[in-house]
Length: 158
Image 1: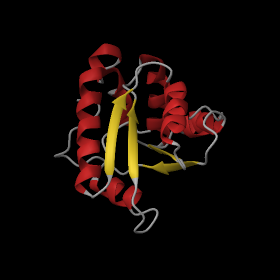
Image 2 (image 1 turned 90 degrees about the vertical axis):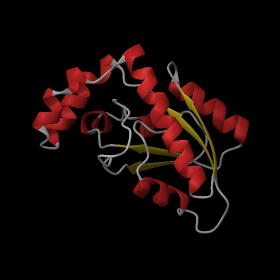
Image 3 (image 1 turned 135 degrees about the vertical axis):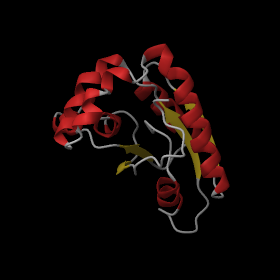
Image 4 (image 1 turned 45 degrees about the vertical axis):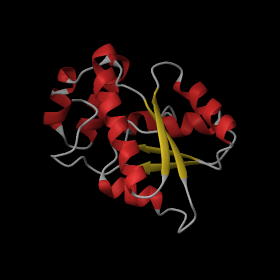
């Protein structure tokens, strides 16, 4: 489960977690939602990124975030495949944890990787994706922090 496009460092990290064992990925990407805007702004402030906090209102959300999310997903799946892994992906608009549980059951996944930026408020209250997924999926959930998006990569926000 991702919230922004995978960087080359992210791809290298997740594709080498299990050594030389063949790995396949089902990547789930959820477009940004307006309900998360305040939490994202608080996280930006906690990280000292005041300028980014002020720009949260300018990021596409809801239906406007669907196209950027699809581009980010396409980029991420292609990057995983270029690294030698099998990969497919889905943009998830509703009930992401239910979709995640269905994917785990359908594919008989060994684990779930949640690759995300730090979300201090959500993590403190155990409302982040990884904490919530641990109660839903029945397999280990590994939470990793994603790397910064390079200037020349597509972003989930546009």
